[in-house]
Image (cartoon, rainbow, N blue to C red; front, side):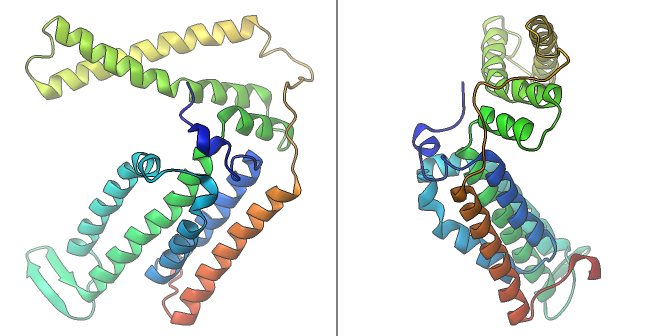
Length: 261
């Protein structure tokens, strides 16, 4: 079952070619990776949030997709604040822990940078059907069909892994295996899920080979994938966001090229 919301799939962004969305996300992400500063990341994040209505994603759907990234960015922010670069006024010091103006500024830059890279990627791919992406990669980029179809099959099985994990947990509780030892239970359940995934992958591979997915020769595709003018509009919008974030950081004097750190 697809994890893409129906409203998001039929949104203005949902009708854009998947390859254009991939290129737009890479354009913004690569630009933000060139510098660690709060201005470029903040401007990019604000402009991305301003364009969020085009995806028609509810705040709940967006939060469900983003909360692991937000939590990871927050943890990285705290660690950088305590152990980051020392400069300016020092507010707290105890052993290896040191909070200063430099560590706070670096932590803020990293936090905004992670969100600025993650939000457009999550929003763009939340409006993308995996089959459309596979069609674009194979028909436009001419990637090997075996690689594309194998990746598509694996992506489609992600939802099944979640269901398998839930069913394994319920089965182990019914047998009384999961009553004690949380760490031991998670380790055993993870190994069982790993074995189950290998068995399912082997069966799926055999079935795909039997149906001719790995046959040599030119393939035909049920749905053609073409680039249209609206795809160029999305790429142009991503380029505007990337350039605006870089120009704002350079104008503010905060642009810090990563290789100069």
